[in-house]
Image (tube, rainbow, N blue to C red):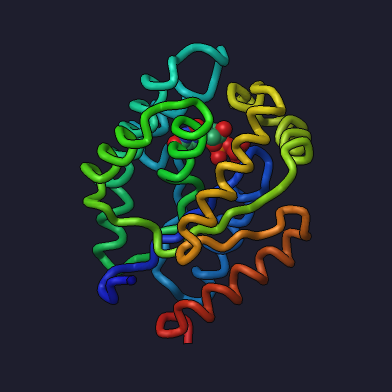
Length: 216
Ligand code: TYD
């Protein structure tokens, strides 16, 4: 249940090249144009320190970190991001649109790489006190389509995760779908094969219906 004094916390999740960064940006722009107080941010990243951790994690050798160390780095980045940016914004009544969040750690490090889910949950609880996003949009798309899109982006040097084999990405896709099923009250699954505008329209309609006290 959303606290009426807090802004909305909206996250986007999905596999590589699913279009969530573009959709986060489009949602942010729409909220700004509707005069909503909102920030756009991403994980790993969002603060200077966390952007530095992002570089450590995403540029370079695919096997540079063992999965537990990798998880701790993602969580360290999340902690700085939460305390310096997300929590203060929500408390001040601003909404937050975040490109990836804890569910990415559950899926990539926990379900797909076998890191203890209990450990991931406990550290998350320590950081956030158990606050979860108010709404999570999962952009679902077959991995071969996503990887093709992602690799074709000319400016993309963050390729460590894209280099994992297709079987890994299938696992990621299924794990996100499982999570969306488990937390059905918070998740909406969107077909990433639809056009950008169609997906954006579905998101706007969903938010308007679900949080009509804010969007009326
Ligand atoms: P992102 O910048 O969203 O890349 P893309 O748009 O290509 O999907 O995320 C970078 C990578 O980091 C992505 O492969 C997923 C991974 N990741 C994790 O493994 N765990 C996490 O907790 C987060 C936030 C991201």
